[in-house]
Image (cartoon, rainbow, N blue to C red; front, side):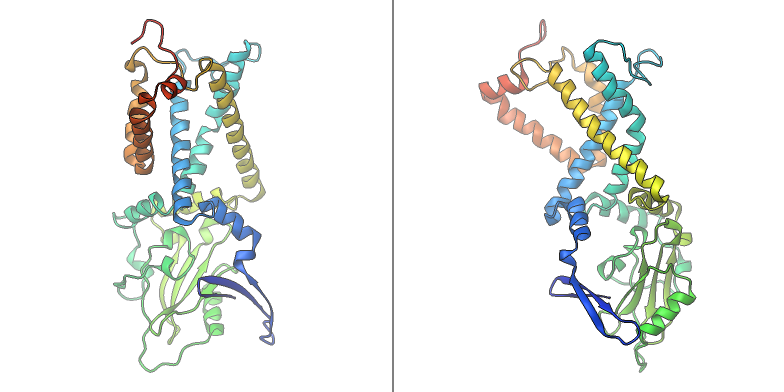
Length: 358
């Protein structure tokens, strides 16, 4: 069992036959928990979460703009879908970056987007949008009328993404004695909840038992609220109850975590991650070879018409992902207010004037 006190969570190991405590572990000392914390928020809390979201947004932007730059003027196999192995060095490096990037683009977008669902800023807003615009919780999950509660299930338990904003009902306190956790476990087993479920104890006198499970496959997800006095099931929310968008998101998250399809899922995920590393290296090499000597900026374009499509992509993307848009504005103002006004910085980052250009 897990016990949270003073902001710290401990895992307690109990002998199921004699109730003897045989060990305990501070979850902060679990390596996998530290890895997950670093993966999700760089171990920096809210600020780290925003940084991760920003990096994810820029990754999506780079993929989309990369596809825009890749788009072929003439459809052919080599240089478009396969690298030109006998081309000159610069063209060969370009193909090693662009061609695998196109093949991996859908997987990268999928991996990054499903990760964005967990972010505290954009992910929360997207989640609220889906539950408040006709994609929310169907009446069939409630026994009786749906509760009017300011407490959401994510406030009291770790539950699947689709159930996080589920309102928490209250228990009936009319002179009943609380049911035991053994009875709650029996209820969960009778309802065929996937065996790795967790039981979260009530936190108040009118609180409820909450059963939550993160199974390998999305179709086995379940979140259940049980009256702590009567043992009545107040809410039973399963994958089959999810709206279409909720099912898609649940499936996407389990694929993102490498669980839905087992080992093959993890191997493909590893290949995609290695591919991202390769694209970063290839892109850096291309930039280094293309940049003017002694400068860090890209060669200037003679006409804004040439990058009109990229500007449209950036504007649309900034509207969909405000954190990304804010970062673009910050970069613009730093360039306009600082870099362009200091000759040495302008020389380094903007490079020499283009021949015959403005």
